[in-house]
Length: 404
Image (cartoon, rainbow, N blue to C red; front, side):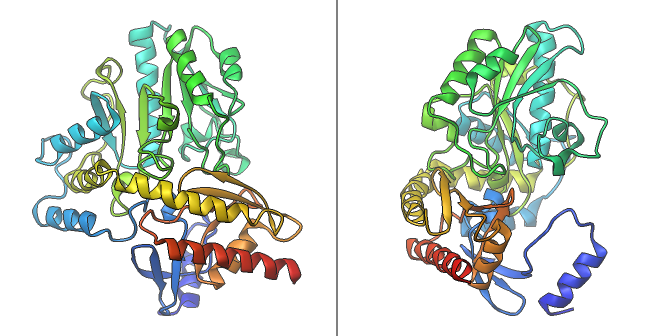
């Protein structure tokens, strides 16, 4: 098996069809560019859904991983290891929180936040046993575990996986009033994405996060910000909440925290929240392992320079300015912040997948969502020339699709 066609055929025949990938087989990657098994190069404008904020094979991250591979990869949390303290302190300082709880995947981090919020509700807020509820948003995407899909409004994620986990109330995204009306004495948390990525890079109205923060503070409710996709430099700030000066009670982090090398996730909160977790109540064999912590430490060092946040801001202005010029030329709307955009394609011209396939033929990799939207989230290390070239390829692809 050496050709793309052969590898795709076996992959489709021998794996569950839980994804619908574009027909490209990637062999190697450096920076913002990837190369398929036939040697064709593509500009990666998806970045592993923001997992590759620092690009493919960032030298500092790879060096940290290689050095750690020589020494120690796993102890389980049955023992301490020499990378753990620095990771906890560094991520705590980055988030401004007292403590962190490390896991592996984003979905695990969300599950951790849910468990911590419920336990805090019973032990600190005084909610009666099994009565806690958490308010979530329509259009949310927090993962695909059984608990998480129980409060999804996406039929693909939810249908035929019941019975569903109770204890969640779904309200309209972007409306603080909707949260206020849904909250009661048993509400322990509000779980919100500062920007909804999977829904099409939806940015809430200005002031929304501030209103949610104020409401939660007034009512004794934890504000949980899922910054798995929006955090760690992608939007031009360390966290998307920073745009409104909002500090949630719990940060949920993942994706870019692993530098595109290993899965690393965590929640960060102050001691009065995370202190409710005691030994044996939550954990993971691989959560906070030495390799993950070494990689995470390198990522934190990169973010502490501010270089990537500034670069995402600068290139984000270029991205959004040029994309807006395509409105009326096959594009209906452009949304996003920093180096992250949701582009709504005119459905009379093409679907999002058709545009993604047209871009692939032109050497640009992007991905569709919800039928007529494509998401653009190139690595922050992308050059301005490459970014402009990618947008030019989108313009040309739309013109060809429009004119037939």
